Amino acid sequence: MSELTAGATVSADPSTGFGLAGKVALVTGAASGIGRATAELLARMGVKVTAVDINGKGLAGIDVGDSGVTDVADLSVPRACDQVVASLLARERRLDILVNCAAILKRVPITEVDAALWEKLMDANLLSQFAMCRAASRPMRKQGSGRIVVISSTAAFNGGADNSSVYAIGKGGSLALAKSMARQLASHGVTVNAICPGGIDTPMGRSGFTEESWNAHYARNVPLRRAGQPEEVAKAILFLVSDWGSYVTGHTLDVEGGLLLR
Amino acid sequence: MNQELSILGLGGRVAIVTGAASGIGKSAAEILAAAGARVVACDVNAEGVKAAVAGFAGSGHAAEAIDLADLGACDTLVRRTAEREGRLDILLNVAATLRRLDIEDIDEAEWDRLMNVNLRSQYFLCRAAGEAMKSGKWGRIVNVSSGAGLVGGFVGATAYAITKAGIMTLTKSFAKDLGPHGITVNTLSPGAIDTPMQRTGMTRDTLEAARSRIPLGRMGLPAECARAAVFLASDLASYITGHILAADGGFLMR
Image 1 (cartoon, rainbow over the protein chains, first blue to last red):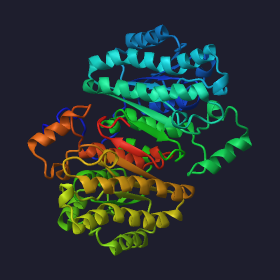
Image 2: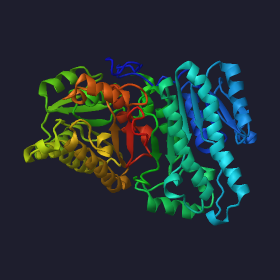
Image 3: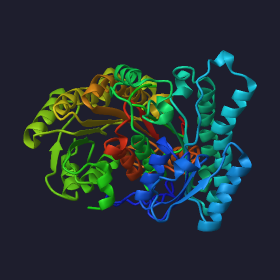
Image 4: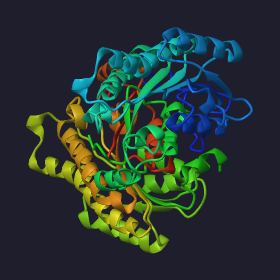
């Protein structure tokens, strides 16, 4: 270790694991799709997971192990985000990992979007991510460590398929949010990264597709010739939030089978 | 073996790692071996790569002294590995050479040497490895590039930066071509990593200036970059292809 790498806490031992056991994580949008797969995978890796969603019914079936907790909240309201983090801190006294998966998608042509729809989607998708990052950054700064992942979308780069419109715009905002947070929190030992999932086999991803058009679309347009599974995104998130992602921050990681090749 | 590493799905995989005598390549080869892969470690430095392999966990590894400026050596390496092991699953193209020269001082011989070692070897290794991987319907290729390839080189690394930009494009071309066969091809784009190559031709002041511009406030360690490369070579990255993964402490924010 030299003066150039001072502060690195990485083990040179090649058999080093992911360092996730015992960590405290908050995963939003955990009732289904990528959020659920992430909450369950992290729990299997020994993380104490608080799984949050507006859909309490959907959360009921989640398997986050004995140390896992569920919390029902509407994260489009910043006060609710603060409360979710406050009640987690009251239980655990620390927060190591935040994964922002919560989002909603409405397919409306961009020229037909009214202010009410704009506000609803922006609050649910972007304001919620900002408020969660802000709330989580407070304990992480104090600890001098933390990992944040913000879920964006390939829609942020290509405008989104089939009238994703406001969703795509919000996801573009997620990219800048992640970078802005990464810049400010870097000196506190906190990494912040975005993930751009492409076509992932979730209820949201499939909305607006038939079984046939879904399969045909991804067989035709993606080098890997298939859509992705939510677990595949969860595994990429595992890398970023673990000890293995220690030198990756401010990055946008595409998990899209080669859809963009940007 | 650390059981946690089983999620990588690397047990029994056969991997070729170039540039394995030092820096990121050596560290990545060690991690692959620790995760249960059989590693063919290659380097132009015969003594260095032999010593590296002696330190690997597990068994069945091999050391290959090879100069990647020699085109024929690339095909031979892949063919010999596939014949001996009966399969090839992973290729990590880490080997590179760097000389810091002003644009005026790069002559044709220097240009050719950089292009051949850094870029041409990766192309022909990708092509040969892709062919060898097709029968298994699974493969991982990771081409190590550099942030220099995106923003131009630093401190005289001009031609080096051009080879690194070429690597990003060849990665995307191979990602398209090999994707239908279940083979992913990705670029790892390290920032300032504290390796012997990084320090080449640098002074205390230029190194400190590079460090001070990194949001995380420090250069990276070879082991950090190596883990990012092994991530891309593992089951964890099954839906990632054609991507440029930056492990740069936030330097480029991209």
